[in-house]
Image (cartoon, rainbow, N blue to C red; front, side, top):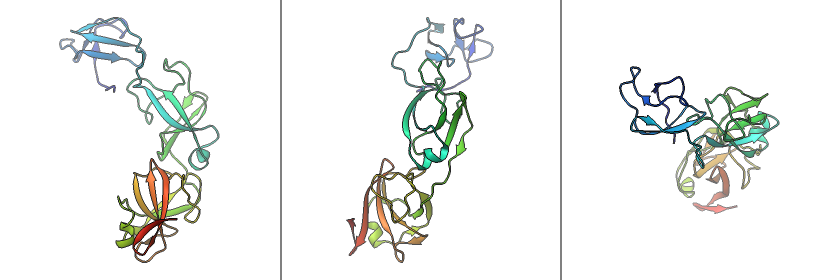
Length: 230
Protein backbone atom coordinates (compact mmCIF):
# COMPACT_ATOMS: atom_id res chain seq x y z
CA UNK A 1 0.00 0.00 0.00
CA UNK A 2 1.38 3.41 -0.95
CA UNK A 3 2.15 6.02 1.72
CA UNK A 4 2.25 9.72 0.87
CA UNK A 5 5.07 11.93 2.16
CA UNK A 6 7.25 14.97 1.43
CA UNK A 7 10.46 14.17 -0.45
CA UNK A 8 13.03 16.24 -2.33
CA UNK A 9 14.65 15.49 -5.68
CA UNK A 10 18.06 16.50 -7.00
CA UNK A 11 16.47 17.17 -10.37
CA UNK A 12 13.43 18.92 -11.84
CA UNK A 13 11.30 15.75 -11.91
CA UNK A 14 11.25 12.13 -10.81
CA UNK A 15 12.05 11.02 -14.35
CA UNK A 16 15.29 13.06 -14.49
CA UNK A 17 16.47 13.01 -10.84
CA UNK A 18 19.18 10.60 -9.68
CA UNK A 19 18.34 10.53 -5.96
CA UNK A 20 15.62 11.31 -3.41
CA UNK A 21 16.09 13.02 -0.05
CA UNK A 22 13.99 13.71 3.04
CA UNK A 23 15.33 17.25 3.62
CA UNK A 24 15.32 20.36 1.49
CA UNK A 25 19.13 20.64 1.70
CA UNK A 26 19.46 17.23 -0.01
CA UNK A 27 21.70 15.79 2.69
CA UNK A 28 19.56 12.93 4.10
CA UNK A 29 18.81 10.12 1.66
CA UNK A 30 15.29 8.76 1.59
CA UNK A 31 14.78 5.10 2.60
CA UNK A 32 15.19 2.46 -0.07
CA UNK A 33 11.97 1.55 -1.86
CA UNK A 34 9.63 2.48 -4.68
CA UNK A 35 8.63 6.10 -5.28
CA UNK A 36 6.00 7.54 -7.59
CA UNK A 37 4.80 11.00 -8.57
CA UNK A 38 1.48 9.53 -9.70
CA UNK A 39 2.69 9.14 -13.28
CA UNK A 40 5.93 7.12 -13.16
CA UNK A 41 7.57 4.87 -10.56
CA UNK A 42 11.28 4.33 -9.79
CA UNK A 43 13.11 2.27 -7.19
CA UNK A 44 15.61 3.94 -4.84
CA UNK A 45 18.53 1.74 -3.78
CA UNK A 46 21.39 3.12 -1.72
CA UNK A 47 20.30 6.71 -2.47
CA UNK A 48 20.42 5.99 -6.19
CA UNK A 49 17.34 6.02 -8.40
CA UNK A 50 17.18 3.08 -10.77
CA UNK A 51 15.68 3.15 -14.22
CA UNK A 52 11.96 3.80 -14.53
CA UNK A 53 9.93 0.57 -14.40
CA UNK A 54 6.52 -0.51 -15.60
CA UNK A 55 4.86 -2.14 -12.64
CA UNK A 56 2.81 -5.18 -13.70
CA UNK A 57 0.16 -6.35 -11.27
CA UNK A 58 0.36 -3.28 -9.03
CA UNK A 59 -3.08 -2.32 -7.77
CA UNK A 60 -2.51 0.46 -5.22
CA UNK A 61 -4.50 2.83 -7.40
CA UNK A 62 -7.34 0.45 -8.29
CA UNK A 63 -10.69 0.75 -6.52
CA UNK A 64 -14.06 -0.97 -6.88
CA UNK A 65 -17.04 1.39 -6.75
CA UNK A 66 -20.80 1.23 -7.09
CA UNK A 67 -22.02 3.03 -10.22
CA UNK A 68 -25.25 4.29 -11.76
CA UNK A 69 -25.32 6.30 -14.99
CA UNK A 70 -28.67 8.02 -14.36
CA UNK A 71 -28.75 9.81 -11.01
CA UNK A 72 -27.65 9.79 -7.38
CA UNK A 73 -31.20 8.79 -6.42
CA UNK A 74 -30.96 5.71 -8.63
CA UNK A 75 -27.49 4.92 -7.30
CA UNK A 76 -28.77 4.83 -3.72
CA UNK A 77 -32.38 3.76 -4.11
CA UNK A 78 -32.81 1.85 -7.36
CA UNK A 79 -29.66 -0.16 -7.92
CA UNK A 80 -26.07 -0.03 -9.10
CA UNK A 81 -23.42 -1.95 -11.01
CA UNK A 82 -19.84 -2.64 -10.00
CA UNK A 83 -17.22 -0.41 -11.63
CA UNK A 84 -13.44 -0.82 -11.36
CA UNK A 85 -11.62 2.50 -11.77
CA UNK A 86 -8.07 3.75 -11.29
CA UNK A 87 -6.48 6.70 -9.48
CA UNK A 88 -2.98 8.01 -9.00
CA UNK A 89 -0.96 5.87 -6.58
CA UNK A 90 -1.62 7.02 -3.01
CA UNK A 91 -4.93 8.73 -3.82
CA UNK A 92 -8.23 7.82 -2.16
CA UNK A 93 -11.66 8.12 -3.74
CA UNK A 94 -13.01 10.77 -1.36
CA UNK A 95 -10.27 13.31 -2.19
CA UNK A 96 -8.74 12.37 -5.55
CA UNK A 97 -9.17 14.87 -8.37
CA UNK A 98 -9.83 12.33 -11.12
CA UNK A 99 -10.68 8.67 -11.73
CA UNK A 100 -9.87 6.71 -14.88
CA UNK A 101 -10.96 3.66 -16.85
CA UNK A 102 -7.39 2.44 -17.40
CA UNK A 103 -4.38 1.78 -15.16
CA UNK A 104 -2.25 4.16 -17.25
CA UNK A 105 -4.54 7.00 -16.14
CA UNK A 106 -5.20 8.25 -19.66
CA UNK A 107 -8.95 7.62 -20.17
CA UNK A 108 -11.30 9.41 -17.74
CA UNK A 109 -14.04 7.34 -16.14
CA UNK A 110 -17.38 7.46 -17.91
CA UNK A 111 -19.89 10.05 -16.74
CA UNK A 112 -22.21 8.95 -13.96
CA UNK A 113 -22.52 8.62 -10.21
CA UNK A 114 -20.02 6.71 -8.08
CA UNK A 115 -19.71 5.72 -4.44
CA UNK A 116 -17.60 3.36 -2.38
CA UNK A 117 -19.68 0.25 -1.56
CA UNK A 118 -22.55 1.17 0.80
CA UNK A 119 -21.00 4.55 1.67
CA UNK A 120 -23.45 7.33 2.53
CA UNK A 121 -21.78 9.79 0.11
CA UNK A 122 -21.08 9.83 -3.62
CA UNK A 123 -19.21 11.75 -6.33
CA UNK A 124 -20.47 12.59 -9.81
CA UNK A 125 -18.30 12.36 -12.92
CA UNK A 126 -19.57 14.72 -15.61
CA UNK A 127 -17.71 15.83 -18.75
CA UNK A 128 -14.66 13.93 -17.45
CA UNK A 129 -14.62 16.03 -14.27
CA UNK A 130 -15.07 14.44 -10.83
CA UNK A 131 -17.37 16.43 -8.55
CA UNK A 132 -17.09 16.96 -4.81
CA UNK A 133 -18.06 14.37 -2.21
CA UNK A 134 -21.80 14.76 -1.57
CA UNK A 135 -24.18 13.16 0.91
CA UNK A 136 -26.50 10.75 -0.85
CA UNK A 137 -30.29 11.10 -0.96
CA UNK A 138 -32.64 9.42 1.52
CA UNK A 139 -34.61 6.61 -0.06
CA UNK A 140 -38.32 6.21 0.54
CA UNK A 141 -39.50 3.40 2.75
CA UNK A 142 -37.85 4.18 6.07
CA UNK A 143 -37.85 2.06 9.23
CA UNK A 144 -36.01 1.94 12.57
CA UNK A 145 -33.35 -0.45 13.82
CA UNK A 146 -31.69 -1.36 17.11
CA UNK A 147 -28.04 -1.67 17.91
CA UNK A 148 -26.01 -4.68 16.80
CA UNK A 149 -26.19 -8.06 18.54
CA UNK A 150 -24.25 -11.24 17.84
CA UNK A 151 -27.31 -13.32 18.76
CA UNK A 152 -30.83 -13.25 17.34
CA UNK A 153 -32.34 -14.68 20.54
CA UNK A 154 -31.03 -11.77 22.62
CA UNK A 155 -33.79 -9.56 21.20
CA UNK A 156 -36.38 -12.04 22.50
CA UNK A 157 -35.12 -11.88 26.10
CA UNK A 158 -33.58 -8.41 26.52
CA UNK A 159 -35.06 -4.94 26.00
CA UNK A 160 -33.33 -3.13 23.12
CA UNK A 161 -34.16 0.37 21.89
CA UNK A 162 -35.20 0.47 18.23
CA UNK A 163 -34.55 4.13 17.51
CA UNK A 164 -32.09 4.54 14.62
CA UNK A 165 -33.72 5.64 11.34
CA UNK A 166 -32.68 3.62 8.27
CA UNK A 167 -33.82 2.92 4.71
CA UNK A 168 -33.24 0.21 2.15
CA UNK A 169 -31.66 0.56 -1.27
CA UNK A 170 -34.78 -1.00 -2.80
CA UNK A 171 -37.10 1.44 -1.01
CA UNK A 172 -38.80 -1.40 0.88
CA UNK A 173 -40.18 -0.48 4.30
CA UNK A 174 -40.74 -2.43 7.53
CA UNK A 175 -43.53 -4.55 6.11
CA UNK A 176 -41.88 -5.27 2.74
CA UNK A 177 -38.18 -5.73 3.62
CA UNK A 178 -37.04 -9.06 2.26
CA UNK A 179 -34.00 -11.30 2.04
CA UNK A 180 -31.47 -9.77 -0.35
CA UNK A 181 -32.34 -6.16 0.50
CA UNK A 182 -29.41 -3.82 1.21
CA UNK A 183 -29.33 -1.09 3.86
CA UNK A 184 -28.41 2.43 2.78
CA UNK A 185 -25.16 3.47 4.49
CA UNK A 186 -24.23 -0.13 5.33
CA UNK A 187 -24.46 -2.22 8.49
CA UNK A 188 -21.90 -4.43 10.21
CA UNK A 189 -22.50 -8.18 10.12
CA UNK A 190 -24.83 -9.43 12.85
CA UNK A 191 -28.42 -9.15 14.06
CA UNK A 192 -30.68 -6.09 14.37
CA UNK A 193 -34.23 -5.66 15.58
CA UNK A 194 -36.28 -3.43 13.28
CA UNK A 195 -39.70 -1.82 13.44
CA UNK A 196 -41.98 0.59 11.60
CA UNK A 197 -41.69 3.22 14.36
CA UNK A 198 -39.18 4.19 17.03
CA UNK A 199 -39.89 1.73 19.83
CA UNK A 200 -38.23 -1.06 21.82
CA UNK A 201 -38.25 -4.85 21.95
CA UNK A 202 -40.15 -4.96 25.26
CA UNK A 203 -43.29 -3.14 24.12
CA UNK A 204 -43.19 -2.73 20.33
CA UNK A 205 -43.91 -4.84 17.30
CA UNK A 206 -40.65 -5.78 15.61
CA UNK A 207 -38.75 -8.32 13.56
CA UNK A 208 -35.09 -9.34 13.57
CA UNK A 209 -32.86 -9.17 10.49
CA UNK A 210 -29.53 -10.89 10.02
CA UNK A 211 -26.99 -8.88 8.02
CA UNK A 212 -24.09 -10.38 6.09
CA UNK A 213 -22.03 -8.19 3.74
CA UNK A 214 -24.73 -5.51 4.11
CA UNK A 215 -27.45 -7.81 2.76
CA UNK A 216 -30.39 -9.21 4.70
CA UNK A 217 -29.85 -12.97 4.73
CA UNK A 218 -32.59 -13.91 7.23
CA UNK A 219 -35.68 -12.39 8.87
CA UNK A 220 -37.02 -13.79 12.14
CA UNK A 221 -39.80 -13.30 14.67
CA UNK A 222 -39.56 -13.85 18.42
CA UNK A 223 -41.84 -16.73 19.43
CA UNK A 224 -41.76 -18.13 22.97
CA UNK A 225 -38.46 -16.41 23.67
CA UNK A 226 -36.72 -17.84 20.58
CA UNK A 227 -36.03 -16.51 17.09
CA UNK A 228 -37.85 -18.35 14.36
CA UNK A 229 -37.24 -17.57 10.69
CA UNK A 230 -40.26 -16.37 8.76
